[in-house]
Amino acid sequence: MKTIILVNPPLSVQERYGGLSWAGGVEPPFGLCYLASVLRENGYPVTILDAQALKLSAEATIRHIVEENPDVIGLTAVTSSVSAAAFVVAQVKSAIPRISAIVGGAHVSAMPRETLLRFPQFDAGVIGEGEQTILELIPALHNSDALRSVAGIIFQDHDSLIINPPRAYIPDLDTLPMPAFDLLPELATHYTLPLQSVSRLPSVSLITSRGCVGKCTFCDHSVFGNQYRSHSPEYIFSMIKVMHDQYSIREILFEDDNFLVNKSRVRKLIDLIQKGKLDLRWSCLTTISPLDPDLLKEMKNAGCWQILLGIESGSQCILDILEKQVAVDQIRSTIESVHAQGIKTKGFVIAGSPGETRQTLAQTRSLILSAPLDDVSITFFVPYTGTALYPQIASHGAFDDDWIKSNQFQIVFLPKGITSDELADFVKGTYRMFYFRLRIIFSYVQRCTNISIFGKYIAAGFAFIKYSIRTKNKTYFEVADRNSDIL
Image (cartoon, rainbow, N blue to C red; front, side):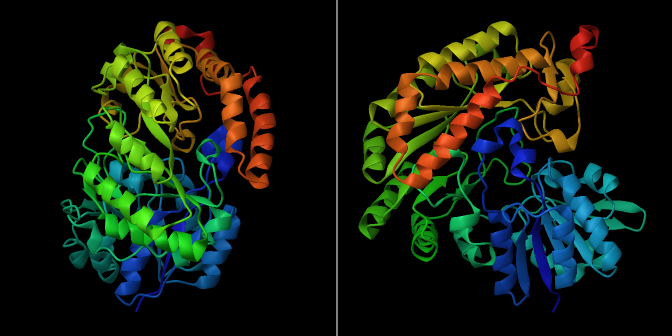
């Protein structure tokens, strides 16, 4: 039986969040946990190495893998971490020539051919969901005829790349065994939510559904598609119970694309949480849509303290380009309805989308400052491969297509007529205007439920001041800023 190590490749908090690393979180690699549980259930010896949570360098990651001496290495990678994953594999293969390397995750699912052409050290890539694919792929490794029958993969066949037909999505997620949390580093000490979404410690994120029915042109659905599927309330509660009882987790962020899409599921889960009398607070993500006031009240009574909303922009023009299918007035109304129930709101905003102008940025800032938001997270637009906007991105502005920089916290795309300094100043200036207000400061004082959180907020406060007063924004676009003709 082949031995397998599943790896979350090295990517520091600084590399992921840039200048906002002080507020960043570390999320468990749930995809690897599901894969590990499926492999273990089928008799494979399997381990997980989360280099990000353990803060391992590439060299330390390589040493760990070589010492374990597995037959197969499987890595998950997003665009900003795929280069690190490839470097690790190349070095491991030098030490263990017999090893097979598989890459999965959002990046290879969106651009399989480009990934394996650039990084031939990967023997195969999993496109889309991997739980069923991995069980067929591992015994087929080193047998090109067998590999051709495995749906949902791309693989190296001598000097050719073969992309097999896609695999159908898993219709019933409850058929998956419980994620192998026990193979991760200690949850309570190695993982935490972004600082804006923490009210208790230890805290961790959880994903309970797959697939998003939205049509947003900036989102890539290569892994889970547009078909919504979810775990049952009973399955979700079992995961929560494990986290609460075995790992002492006291706060959970449900990081589904739209946690509230199935109201009956939410109500049943609320009932289970209350009957279980768990000492737990929680928050969730949802889209901009009319929200049932009665449901919001039930959520608050069951421990929900924050709802995170995908706002993206305060300009109707930009919302239409992104195909959000919402109006600015609906955004404001949704924020106000959550606020009215005593639940805090956090808005996600994108700066520098195609079509962005100084006027649209001003409209976004106006919405952020006038709506009753309690937190805001502003990231830069990244034209990911696999999104609807990617094929036409060159017509909208200048794009630095460097995979390593594609973390949403570095400027890699500049809309026509906007400079990188203007975008950076918008973000930093909006943060200053938003957070240097008594209402927001007092809100954070209220969240200080223990000395650990108080210390984090104090340290973050000083880091935020340092970040927000920096004026220079060094990017690939410095030359472009001096020569707007190329935009």
